[in-house]
Length: 125
Image (cartoon, rainbow, N blue to C red; front, top):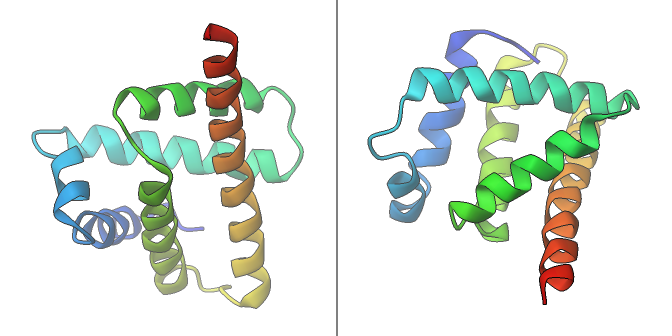
């Protein structure tokens, strides 16, 4: 993965342009800060793929934050699509194996977030 500013610009341009609903999420937001957070999150995803312990709590926290923002599973699908498009453009090593690795990690993270939210909802009821 590249850490080039153009990568993050490409991702957010792709993501925000997918729908008015997505565009609304980013209205009046500090895009420089969001790009920094995304960069940090992507590095954490890479560590998750390498089996680093302790990141599950971070991923669960991300799930809670996104839940408060009313982010739904369909939005994560759009996020994944935009991210993979940017990876395809900016990763010189992009191939089917790289794509499969990204899909695996992203899908695992999304499932972890939603599972944690479901468990919290069940415990609260």
